[in-house]
Structure formats: structure tokens, C-alpha cells
Figure 1 (cartoon, rainbow, N blue to C red):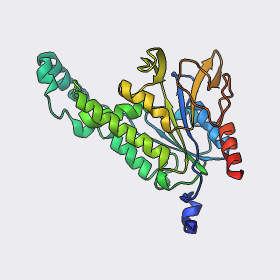
Figure 2: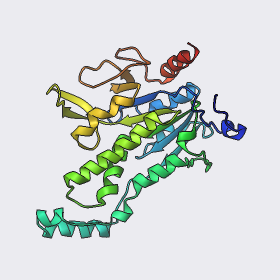
Figure 3: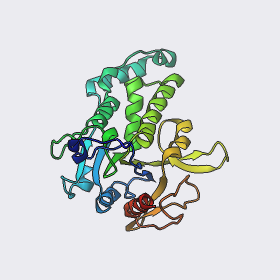
Figure 4: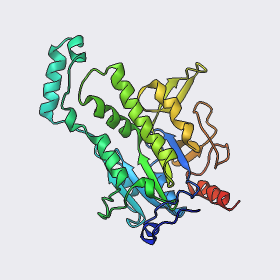
Length: 282
């Protein structure tokens, strides 16, 4: 029997667990390649859009309808100058072993990752002040965008170490695990469309030994695993004065389920949403 939801939840975009989930899309590109700008095409595709910024970028979408595109900005942790001076003095006067054994350095001030989880559990739009409940209750008429993985990665590490200058292998492991769990949650346990943006950095592929452009995140082990649960992984490029998408760039690990394997694609989510809707009718 299909799960029936109260009419007030349906009006707010709540998901039925019988719904076919929306697509998960991973946008990879350098700074200024149009990742954030392309978010507006989710609106033209007919979705209500929610953007969780982990770095400044709201001005790119400032001209959109605040009743259709909502955002929340989780500001990166920024220690005071006095905290930075205290940390710098320790770095300047202590040996490496002592620095490695330092305990909590203002760790309680680095709660960005927790703030991100709170925002996802009850999204409050900073444009209108309205609350929209938990992302995991939304339906396929909505899209949640996390912009970007770089800020999320910093928040995940800061949660573990605060401002400690020397990170142990265990610190890296805990931060990477926590970050992977969140991305997995958004990919497999939500019905809404999910978009994650990421910057690129050059890494060595441990399988082939070749040089690859991979999502910039914590450690070399995590980056190759992140694309597993995304339906489409797209390389976003700027070619002189225009933005393009590619699912065929040779040195980037890409995936195309709702787009053709092709370069020089229009930077738009509309074809992805259209292909997804066609799949609902079959």
C-alpha cells in the first residue's frame, strides 16, 4: 500500500517513500567556471531550489525569485586575531612533537559542520526567513544544492581538530568518514534532487597511476569514492566568454546517465530533469 501523507505535508513538498528519487548531480570545475551560475537553470526546469552555501556566492543568484530559490549561508569558521596570535606563538615556540600532542585549540568555536547539519534538518531561508523542514522529507519537486564541497571539507576537518596546526592520521580519518557519511545520506536517503559542486585538483590515480583531475576534498582516498552514488558527474568549464559542460573530458572521472557522453554541452539542468521525468512515464 502506498504511503499517504497529510495534505499539509504534501503542500510543503514532503516526499512519499514510494516516489522515484530525483537525480544526484556532481558538478566539478575550477573557480569561475559557472558552477554556481548554472544553479538558476534548476528553476527553469520547474524545481523549487534550496542552496546551502559554505562559501560566499549568493550574489550570483541575487536576481532570482526569493519565493522559488532559497538559500542559507553557513559562514566558514574564522578565529579572532587574538586566537590566531596565540596559535602562532605556539607554532613559533613549540617543537613538532609537542604541537602534535596539543589538545583542544578553541575547538568549540568550530561548529560549522554541525550548523550545516542543523540547516539540512530544518532549512531556514535567509532571504525570506521562512522554514521548510528537513531535506529528508522533501519530494521531487525540490532540489537541494550544496555549494561547495571545499567549504564542507574544511568544516568537517575543523569539527575534529579546531585550530590544531598538526593533524594526525586519526584526525584525517574521522573527518573523512564524517564527510562521506553526509554525502551518502544526501545521495541515497533523500527524494529531492541533490546537487553538489566541487573544485578540482590534480591527483595521481592509484589504480592507473596516471594524473587525474579529482574533486578537491580531504585526503586522496576519499576523492575517488565520492562519485559512486551520483547519477551524473559533470565537468564544468569556462571557454573564454562562455560556460560549458562536459561528460567526456578524458582526465576527469565522469558519469552520464541523463546526459549524452559529449563535450561542449549547454550548462543547464533542464535536460537532466527532462530525462528523469521521461523515465517516470515509462
